[in-house]
Length: 213
Image 1 (cartoon, rainbow, N blue to C red):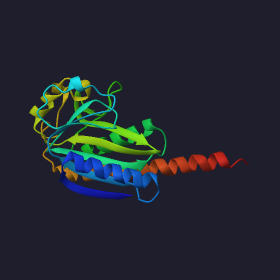
Image 2: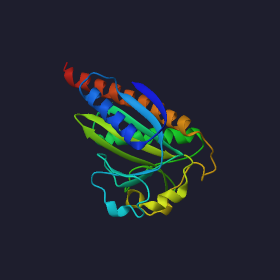
Image 3: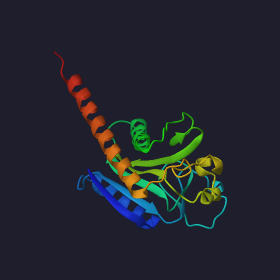
Image 4: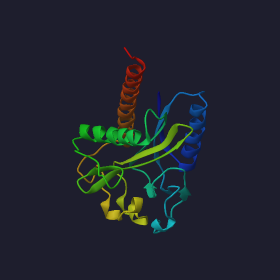
């Protein structure tokens, strides 16, 4: 599995790169890849999202393939786009994405977790990372954004994932200063380890099913 740290990117160029890699992975001509980036200010809306959750239309807006609703990306967010084959179901993959963020934040002294009613990673009642994926031809893409030190006022341009903007928090807001790309790379490394473990467990389960003494 390859991990590429792209630096700051415009959303359309990262989106196009992600889709090209997705096609290559689906066709079996490229290795699974995790892209780590940070975007200039942009709003994206998932395929089943509602444009009326974009409250102020001052930033570029893209409607994309992923699930979820309106999301703001910008400087200060570690954005991680894994382009990977599904080892199990979608739910287990989403769990792995969230778990990679939870384990990363733990290393920075932040105790995070999940909520049953909303995807993403939460600290108390505040959301510190958003998750949204698409799956085509057995390969997942899009991914997760971790709020490291973004300008929080931009979240008031939207109802993030259909929630009030005040629900968003960041590592900086919690008193932790961190480098965006170090956080993103750590999430990628943790996710790679979790996916490899899922693959081993799946292979073990298949072996047991095939072996009938």
